[in-house]
Length: 234
Image (cartoon, one colour):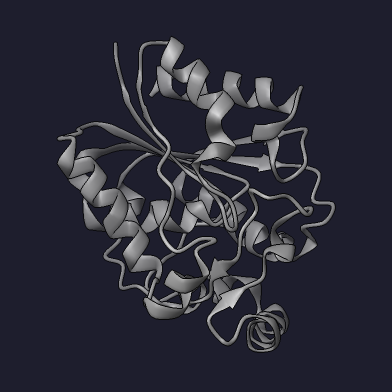
């Protein structure tokens, strides 16, 4: 059965990060979308437009409505998980399943920075002021030097969204990548996620990988295997 799948990338990258996974999921006969969230890497746009988490959630909502998609599988990596949780709030009737890859999802009146904790929050504010003109986070935070890694708008990290609890009513799964080297600041939010996943009685799966399993073997192939099974069994 053909399924509608939307893959939402993390901070500082674009939909390209899922290109290999997209190919395999399409081979299974699925409709697969890997949108690029706006404002990433476009310095002029970063400075002139107020891009926030609501902006991203509405972009995905528009993608769903424009293509008249139902029973959608939303899959978010890292920062993209926050976008998934916001989309589920906006358009729950169209979402069938939500999957978070080494990621985090928000609850009522909570920002991404809230999950990171006060120390990391202060660090990011300072980096934003010192290196991002108070409007973006520099690409150095999101991986090794690479032309496809871009600066990231800061507003999405600080916006608090009103949640009515739709995310708790839609089934989901959490894929926890076990090697946090270089992304130690994610351990605090991931600890919170493990607790929430347990409370929601979602599936919890571990993956022997670093934070970005989509781009390298053998973690990529194992991730694909996990995703295919989750989608098939849901």
